Length: 402
Image (cartoon, rainbow, N blue to C red; front, side):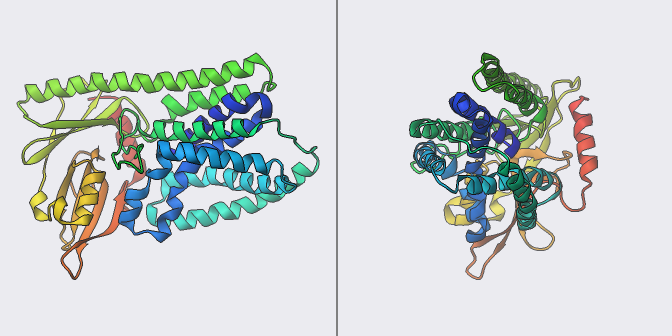
């Protein structure tokens, strides 16, 4: 899920575990814990693009990390609250945390992966004035004495890390939940990576209301658990929704005489009404979109596999990793510039044309001097030529049904 959703979930975990002892500080530290697993992206400068692709949502999103990381992080925070430099460290962490919220939003809406360093610099730049403002504010407040025990801190971070990983398993991207013992990518694929209106906004409203009450009141706990219950209920609803949508797809495939070996489905971005599905046949894939408001039959786009254009996964490491990442749902395109493009078909297309830049996830490859394939770049989202405003307009029209 997106960073905001993970922060909100982490804040709820922090409040549920430490709210009575820390008040709103519990929400803050829970939100920090909810974002830590995604800090695996800071390894990007030290890894190749292929290695980064395999590493993201890996060990930091595992049960193993939740246990060991929870123990270590809980101990660090417990010691932090005993430190004479507690305020300075807290202000630095809080400044970075606050600056990352708008920066992440701008990055999600307007940037691509090649601009991440500019946005990291922007976050650091914003953190400086925030730190100075917090310094003046904290100077007028009495020193806070934490009542939380070592075990409580560790318990809170364990649940923050574990729920982060579990929430990400509901997306198509999935997580390597069982690392380091298995690289299996667990993916229920019933919710979009960003679902602000169904999942995040109701959760935020409940936590904002809870934060207005005294830490010892029952109303505060009621609104905290109401947020957890509503968000959990929504996740369960998406699973039920997925089963219902899959039945529609299977019926349409049978009616249209399309034989297939397997199918994968998931919702389009920012909603749970419009769903993409990719089904695998012998020499091609069939991709379709279905909105619950549709009255017309599903139109399937046939996409040739073209796997014979490149080496088999067993013969080349780059192809192997990309095949693993896409769960085998990929097509190959030989570009006019002589390069090869692997399209991850799980996430669907923008407009259903099947053109070179229409696929949401694209990997551009070339051969090195030894004849092995090399990943030159990952292309995610619209190309530079596309109008993002038009794409979101088309998405809205498609959600309303045809």
